[in-house]
Length: 151
Image 1 (tube, one colour):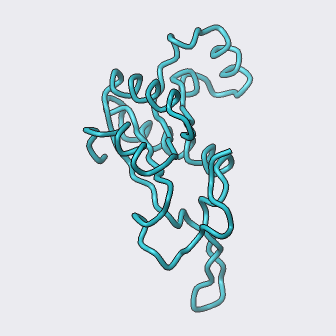
Image 2 (cartoon, helix red, strand yellow):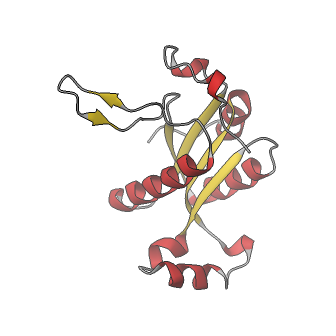
């Protein structure tokens, strides 16, 4: 399992000091609303699967608690369909790297069971990711995502 141990979490450091890097990459051809939807969905999946991404809740001056945010940051990138496919392949074949994707089938359906059924009819090479979330060792993730621009 990929993530941070309790001892590694140091919210006093700059994000670049974190051992792991988290990126989200979205399909540049999608309209803005669909890009945001895909990014939020894979971020939710990632935070549920990668331990230690979220920091502690923070109270404001009135004592109202605000849920913890990613203490080590997340970089949001964009790329073409072809770039995302290549990125997914590189990331999945890299040891110690977590990958979450949002297949196009997810935005073609409105019922999760329908998404599951549609995705089940596609072979892996037919699945088109609209967005990817990648967490892994900083140098490895930098190498995998080299050349993709910020969104």
